[in-house]
Image 1: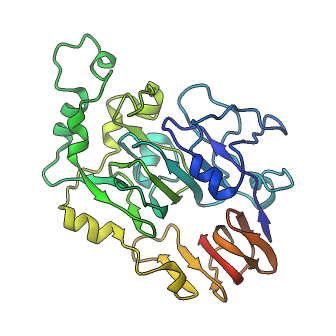
Image 2: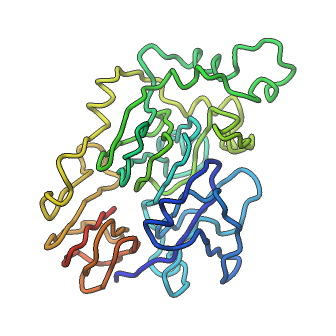
Length: 345
């Protein structure tokens, strides 16, 4: 089965979303399990589209039942048709830098969040043409938990309460991480536990474990939005949140060599099938770019794909740029026409 998906925009604390509108040719509407019509005003607060998602979103306040759950074009929930997906795939568009955050490894997720999955993730950049497009990734050498906690609390011994001390995170937090410039076609892998922040001006496909678990190191976004306490500590409390971070520092060169794959040449000159992510980094998921005449053998029962350019067919289904697809029980994908497809499984 290959089926097209409805838009599935999800609220986040950062600004963005315009490039998703342009890419898909659609509007910022989200269909939720609470009704058959879009019910959430979106403005600039829905910078992500969760494709074929069977994962619910956690925003820390004003929770909306079913937010994050994807639907087929006919309105049925993906989870009701194909079951639970072992991955979560998003379109993500940042108009500003995201706050510093980290996601749990599987052992940490089991211990702190009572979850069988963590949130290892990766990013494939569809547009990194902004002059300052970058990501912040991983601790620099020598960073300890004690130093990170002290910086988080602002070094203040005068605050009456913990909440008072973190009304504004100190700017030096960002200097604990490596700033890595990115461009269109680049790929970045993010291990569970790694502190990170996506810079402004990035439009990407994000592939991750199917959870919305995180801890956040900043109280206020760069544009001034206040983040709820529960979103900051992920529901585990102020002390335990520091257990989510992995305090293994690396040099800039070590970090890039291990986690960053640079675009190699123009996409229109690429071979019909290019594996963007394989087992060299993780056994949790894979990613390919497929163009005209390309065929991919799928080893997993369910996968998600997005058409990043052109028009054509995927296993006989007519597709165009911006289409998002869920794939179930197909062992091979065949792409024809002037089309480029990114497949996540």
